[in-house]
Length: 77
Image (cartoon, rainbow, N blue to C red; front, side):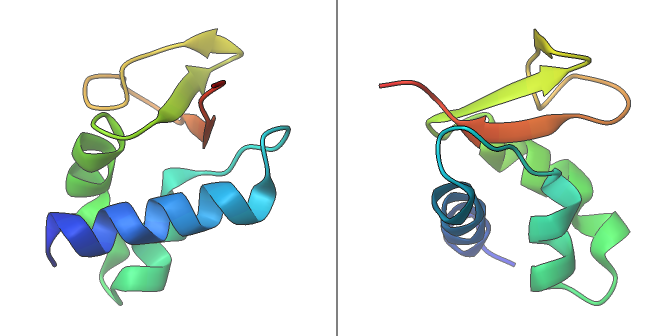
C-alpha cells in the first residue's frame, strides 16, 4: 500500500465527515486492506503528514507516536 493511497483515503474520510466530525484511523485501514491491523502503523504515520488533527480523549496528540485509540478530523484552516 502506497503512502499516496493511504493519504487519499484518510482525506476522503475526513472530507466526508466534515470539519465538525472525527473518525478512527482504522476506518481508513479497513477500507484499504483485508488485514487492516497490520496497516495501522502506516496509516498513523501518513496521518501525521496531512492537514489532520489527531486527538486522544479530546487532547491533541501526534498520531505517529500516540498509544491507544485516537480520532482524526480535518485540521482548522
